[in-house]
Amino acid sequence: QVQLVESGGGLVQAGGSLSLSCAASGLTFSRYAMGWFRQAPGKEREFVAAISWSGVTAYYADPVKGRFTISRDNAKNTVYLQMNSLKPEDTAVYYCAARGPRLAAGTRTDDYEYWGQGTQVTVSS
Image (cartoon, rainbow, N blue to C red; front, side, top):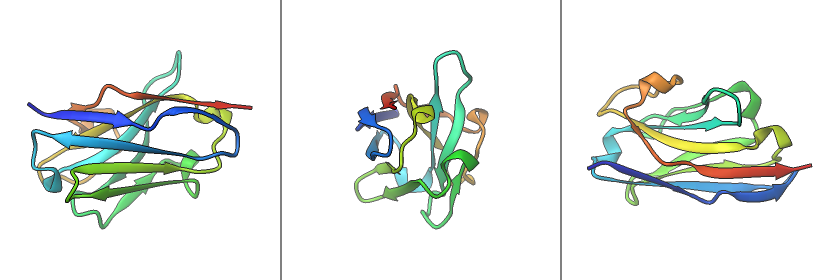
């Protein structure tokens, strides 16, 4: 079965950096668009970033543009989210998600079929 396993979350001070990873198994990773979403307490899950199955195109939510970078290594079946200049409002559980095969990357939760269990990111002020 398909499994997405996030790692790399933790506690960091404002202005710091974290790198999240999401290891995929049970699917042909290179054919799936991948996304990162986050959910803060009491809020709906929201789009953060997505990358096409080819890795050529990336999309970002406005609040993270210029600070976060999504990338993928199809040889390692892994998608990454590099988060720099973190702010307290970035505090949330971060989820990776997969959409495919060979579908365009989406920005809505409904676009994605498979989800990981999430990893907590906490940014202190």
